[in-house]
Amino acid sequence: MFGTDKVKNVWITTDTSELDDKVKERDDAAMKLEAAETKLITLANKARLKAMKKQGYVEEGPPTPSEEPSDESGSVAARWVKPSERPTHRLKLLIGKKVDTINWARSEIERLNPEIEELQAKHRAGDAKLVSSVFVEFYHQADAQSAYQSVMAKLGGAPTAAAVELTTQNFYFTFQVIQTFLVVTVTSSASSVVSDIINNPSSAASLLAKKIPQASNFYISYIILQGLSFSAGALLQISGLILGKVLGALLDNTPRKMFTRWSSLSGLGWGTVYPAFTFLVVVGKYSTHVSDMEHS
Image (cartoon, rainbow, N blue to C red):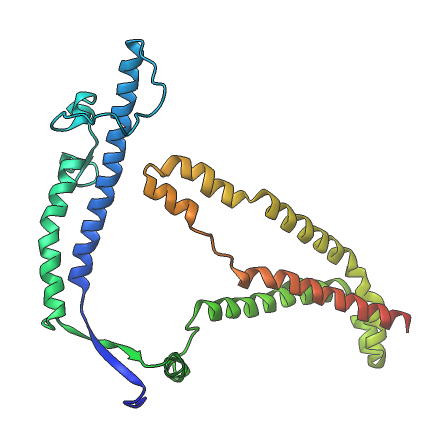
């Protein structure tokens, strides 16, 4: 279709649903293990500090690298944390068997690793079930872009996130113009001059130019409200405060979760931001033209 001088490699994809499920199970077990280990370390450290405080010992700082490491065997946390205080969870909601999270997660990862490796080898050997899709590698980026555009042009919908935002912007702006501009303008002015326009249709433009400014109070209030609400929201950042400070303090109980929250940037939906400002431009131009018609 695209020529042998353009396509470098073609990989036929396989049905990876079983492999995906196994990997997801292992990832869930790994995340549970990470959270449980972090909780156990926190509990053990609190118990250690509490015991040292009772003995009247004050820790001046972290140990230096020159200090000899402890040769204590087994779980060091067992010295400070009772077995009943170790992290646990139920295998099923409410009615499931209660198990030690750390021991269970380690056994699950140990069980799933060979199964995942076996399935991966099966896919590499081409023994898995094939599906109707392929990965195509091109020699040049321009060839890949041409192939992408020729295929996507035949498909409906928005193929990229930018196209989705642009479509949202167009529809939202149209809604703003119809609902906020035309409906308010017509209901506040045209209804009062319908009889005059029927009697004298040639004077419709001048009559509307005189009556439409009666809706200007609404638009002035709308512009002030948009300006204050947008600037106040940009300064306060309520959503960022709730997601970053409140929910972060409650839900982020591992270093990984803390790093993910602080290193991930929240997206901005331009499709709902731009229409609010472009609508203000429409209102401004409308007011300018109506003012010219009124004074002409």
